[in-house]
Length: 467
Image 1 (spheres, rainbow, N blue to C red):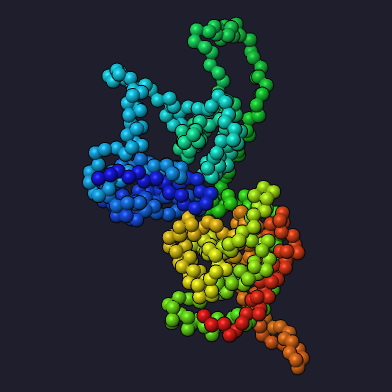
Image 2 (cartoon, helix red, strand yellow):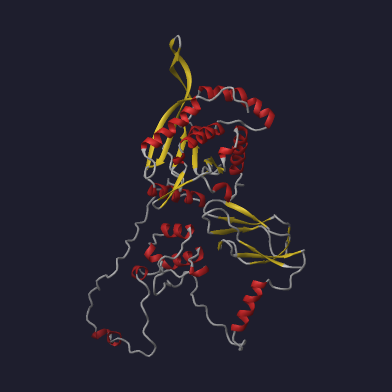
């Protein structure tokens, strides 16, 4: 029999913490290895966390709604299905330390909690803590509540190494709404030492006190946000968690990267005719749809190989050129939100492999079954605005990437066809490619040549290709 400590797993690069959404098991429940134990939300995806070993869920260490750092313990599993009687080494050591530090007078009343109940007192640090790490969730709450970074540095944190958690923020916001404006914008004034003589003005009688003029403000007081007014015909809909994250990321991307968009029109008649020839055959053979998306991805991969400086990211004044080509594809969810899983090492896959991967990611995305790894590590993204009937668009870059391609709808148009016998007018299939790129590192020449090269690969698609 042994006790195993289950920790918050690392769920993708740059993810530092997760929010516990729901426990799927309760204390005393048997658990199979790799069976889902709880649901966790990160700033990228909601996912289920599996058990690392089989046994019995002995103890739950974090509650639903808690924000937990990666690597922090979240539960204890008793292996072999036996009832646990011993604490794990880390827990036993912590218990022994706490027991040694406890006073001998066990009958004395416990000391009062250092912090007041949530929402009753606005508690602030005497000194700010500059440079402290704040999770994306905390930053989002601060932005929504109009809390500046300067004010954020005065908020006491109960998390690891004094970090501010979601619970700390919500308690502060509640107390902040009940506090005077001057108290919100200033740190708590130091209290006089016990026994010190009170200032004279505090002992004077009201009758002896002349009418005082208002003291000048020494700290800028944030102007109260005017209350919005809506008519009875308007409906107020609160953004869900994913919509909020999308909104924040879009604003952040536009702030970080100066966007430029180049447009190219491509004749994709060969591509359309080839797909019409193979889609029913592929559906019957593989049981899956053959869409245009893998064909677009194949062309993008070829163009990236020709122009590798498109496959980069920016870190300060450093350019990071990626050897792997991981293509993100925007997937529309039933809720109307978009999510961008990516195909790892897309340059190592043939057309059949790309087709199966595209279908897999699209299906799991719509069923909310994507993992954090599916959403991390992308180096270039495409989005198919044509699926909504749009001819072109100006997509926003997925940070920290530097470019994104929007695929427009395919439409029949009359066109001039050059032949050895002369020019003819014929019906061809055309589409627009809209390429948005970060002008800090991609100039118009590179951005324009890249999207033109993608169009060339689509126009010159070999109709003898076998899938």
